[in-house]
Image 1 (tube, one colour):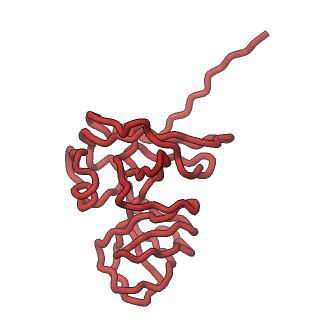
Image 2: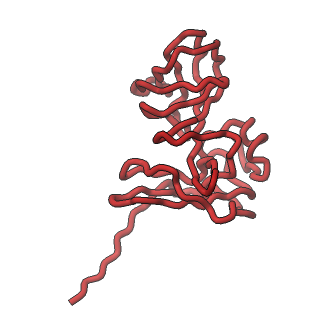
Length: 195
């Protein structure tokens, strides 16, 4: 006797990020690393693609100015803002920094312990993940943003991503992406609503 069943899991929020997709990156991509079991890469996350390998590129927003030689960098941890994990590398003002510790959130920000800063960093400056899981990420390879959530379940050995590269998205529902990045790398994706 065979028994069949269905397992359902709700991933992500109840609101779509995409308003309209008019083009998708040809063939999509295979993730260059597999996140921890139970992780979700949310719809609306920016992706870089090189040789059909796709990597999420997350952006951080510096929430307090930091001086040259400092090893602490405060970043926004409010809704839609990414907080790097220990071992990731982020690039801020052209300098790649390894994250060696992350504080608990306090009043909407976390403190990252990083390599000594080569220059002052102003409040509002953005940085981006330049290495995750030992895979390098180049901001110049941004191809679009993810079309749907990617959930990593037990036994996942590989995962693919569908990337929208043209259309319109609800600005307040996507992961934090600085306006400069929308203008310089994602020109074919228009924003609906406030960023």
